[in-house]
Length: 68
Image (cartoon, rainbow, N blue to C red; front, top):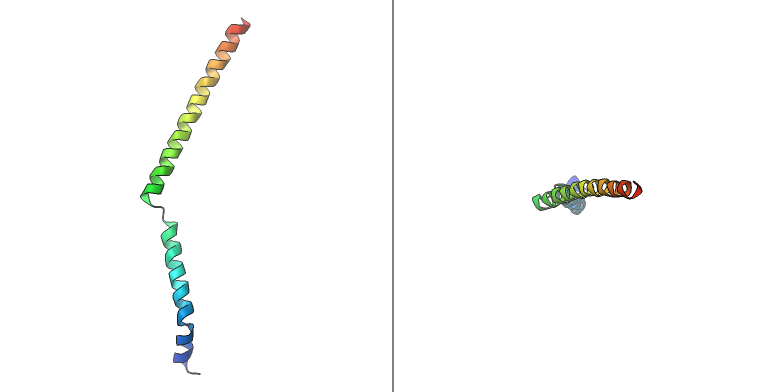
């Protein structure tokens, strides 16, 4: 078997591996839409935490009023 025949037999495998690597690199990069959506969700989570802290302070103040 010549070297050319071996290379031609292995060519489809190399192409599949190359295409797989190409798509993995493409998928690894987050698109701007996904990044924006994650930023929005993070901001919403922070706002929810602040709201919970505020509601907790109000609840404590009401409990103190009722007990006094």
